[in-house]
Length: 122
Image 1 (cartoon, helix red, strand yellow):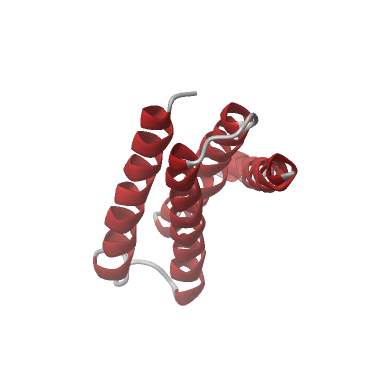
Image 2: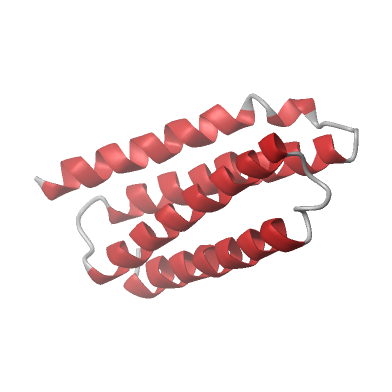
C-alpha cells in the first residue's frame, strides 16, 4: 500500500465528512428529528476519525498498513454510509431496514482496524 493511496483516501473521506457534516447541520436540520440528526452526526464523526488515521498511516507505514487500510475503508463505507442511508431513508418514510445489520459489521471492521494499529505498534 503506497503512502499516496493511504493519504489520498484519508483526505477524500475527510473532505466528504466535512461536506456531509455541513449538509447535516444546514440542509437536514429542518428535515430530521433530533435523534436522526444525532445518528447522522455519529456517522460523520466516525468517518472523520478514521480519515485522520488513514492520513497518519500514509506518513508512517508499518507492516500491517494494507490490512489497516482495508479495515478502515470498508468499515467507513459499511458503518458511516449505512447510517446515512438509514437516517435519510427513515426521514423520507421509507426506511431501508436491510442497512441495519450492515452498520455493526462496519463497526467490527473499524474495531479490527484499531486492533491492527495496536499490534502494528509492537
